[in-house]
Amino acid sequence: MNYRFPEGFTWGTATASYQVEGAIHEGDRTPSIWDTFCARPDTIFDGSSGENACDQYHRYPQDISLMKELGIGAYRMSIAWPRIQPTPDGTVNAEGLDHYRRVLDMLRDNGIRPVVTLYHWDLPQYLQDCGGWPRRDTALRFAEYAASLAKAFGDRVDTWTTLNEPWCAAYLGYGCGDHAPGIKDHAQALAAVHHLNLAHGLGVRAIRAELGDKARCSVTLNLSVTRAATDSKEDVMAKKRADLFNNEVFLGPMLEGRYDSELLTATARVTDWNFVHDGDLESIRQPIDVLGVNYYSTNTVRYRADATSIASDETAPVATTPAGLDVHHNPIPAQEHVETLPPEGELTAMGWNQDPQGLTDILLELTRRYPGLELMVTENGSAWDDEVSKDDSVAGVLGPMVADDAASWSVVPGRIVHDPKRVAYLDAHILAVARAIDAGAKVTGYYAWSLLDNFEWALGYTKRFGIVRVDYGTQERIWKDSGLRYRDIAHTNVI
Ligand code: GCO
Image 1 (cartoon, rainbow, N blue to C red):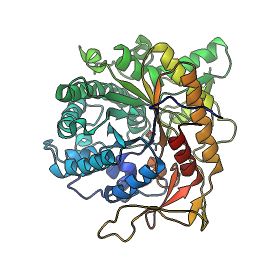
Image 2 (cartoon, rainbow, N blue to C red; image 1 turned 180 degrees about the horizontal axis):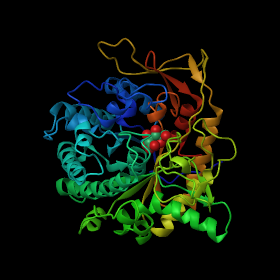
Image 3 (cartoon, rainbow, N blue to C red; image 1 turned 45 degrees about the vertical axis):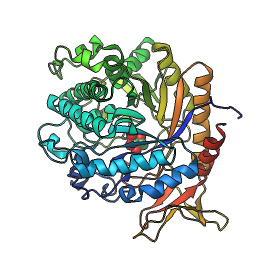
Image 4 (cartoon, rainbow, N blue to C red; image 1 turned 30 degrees about the horizontal axis):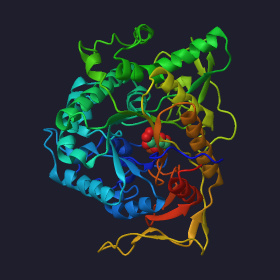
């Protein structure tokens, strides 16, 4: 390995509000659908919630000094909608804005550009009470929310990302119910898909209406990389069907202003798509400056002939991303003939395969389809069962003194997690980005998921993705080898 990334390539880390902030009762924040969902029995594997998470709401000064130590150029964070508009009338909450203004300013003061996601799944509960994403009004409310942020923050934000992974918000939230708000209804899931697409378009428009064309706008998709088990006509058809509902249903409207007609015919028994109004596709297709790609693993599928015995509403648990989908409880409609094969090779703690080539492939595929489109890898990382070792030679990172908090360490000294598998995953995937750039993809940034171990949605705190460990008892941050490795890469720009 000895690849030097282009001058100006951005090394970043990513988190999301509900996964790291905690402080759910502070600053006049009201509940999001995730607070409600976590409070229901048997929704979260370890019975936990984002109530405390990594306490970044209070500890952001320490976390920013940690990022500075890492040498990263950008922080991909998200804003909690119920901190900004806590009440159904949509009044903008000054305390919510002030909190994020302080975070954004401190990032800037430390030379770290904020890449801000407006929606990383924490929908205000009051909007779900009116129907949530299956209801058109939620998209209109999102545009108002986006406008209020653009007005308040202006050029404090480097890149505006409307949505994170609408795939998960729609299909896991409304299709199989593994995520908030926990609804199992394919018709609602498809309506949610469309209204999330609409929210993206209206959101970009609202941001540009406030800030003009100089506002750098994006959206982050978790595009699936699905391979056909063989090149038989049937298996290739199964792959196409998976691609249609995983990828095309977002790329089509957002980048090309259209829904593939097969989406409609394949779901005729589920919905008539009457939620798509005249002019919607025009609204959705807004020019974006950069597309965010989240990538973890790949799927292999084959054609399944006998679909008759498969009930679409069975309730066996499934993995929380496209990897490892179980057709018996598929969050996505019209997949009866698509069988996902068990993943192969050494699996991560999530049960996902490791396939760095898939990252090169998706970046090049996007480049082929949308020549010149700027791309950034907005999430990539892996969960492993980490263990902490004592090591007196490990230096800490001192953060700013915080008056009422004795713990001013950003990272404590004397302890470390040796995580060779996460290091190997990181290296292999960064190299995969390098290969894509070499082959012509315009990739301008890579954001490691995640800066910190955090609340992994339905899996609670049982899966650790951080390049820095969090001790949830004390909120101490502890180095991992992967964090130190990433620090080298960010400082040298070389893999
Ligand atoms: C995701 C989310 C992250 C997850 C990560 C690991 O986009 O699914 O953006 O919040 O924690 O992907 O599963």
